Length: 287
Image (cartoon, rainbow, N blue to C red; front, side):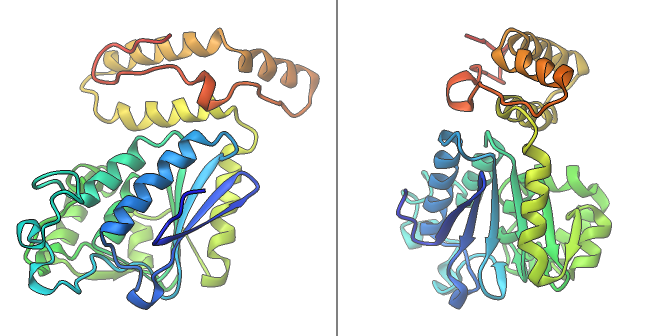
């Protein structure tokens, strides 16, 4: 098990539950959290026992944005000497995390408790499902700190909530409540704080418990990567190859047999061994 500095990781019936564990700092984002999140998704991708990943926070926040203890130089990578920590000159560490979530082979859900501000909001945009506590708060506060939206949110946010709402939130930098987040489609459901994590677990199991893991992993890639494609024919070229690859696999035989025999399926293929190789920038090569 990876020795995380900013996360507590537990396994619960195929669900990897990662909890930010800096409640005294409202789980604010720092270089150690970047490293931990990148390692988390490497770990969950490689573990065939993991069906889905849930991220949540401890204390009063999911993640209250960047750790500002560095003062006015917080976002000046040159002055803070952080270029190596975040992947190179001018590389946004939050964007590295969001892109890693985007590439995840397992569904990712947010159970957003309390404050989700700045990177605490933008890292959630590449997740598949977001549930929130009724008292949670969101804020794309960058313009009020003199910086700009980061973590690929200029790509994700308008696709999730529409351009006018994305502009409203990012221009104003205002903090808003859970009801507004729900109405705009930023979150999918609201729950009492004490019921939040159970609601996320129930949804994660509903998404994955009866489905073939490799099919779920491929469906995740098809849906997200499809948003980058310019024409339906581009998707047709890809999903035709994906469908053909799955049609030759062991899972389809088990899935059909289970359906005909009116029993629960036990899919033999694993993500680590049976996931076809894909190059989304070109015609995929399945081997």
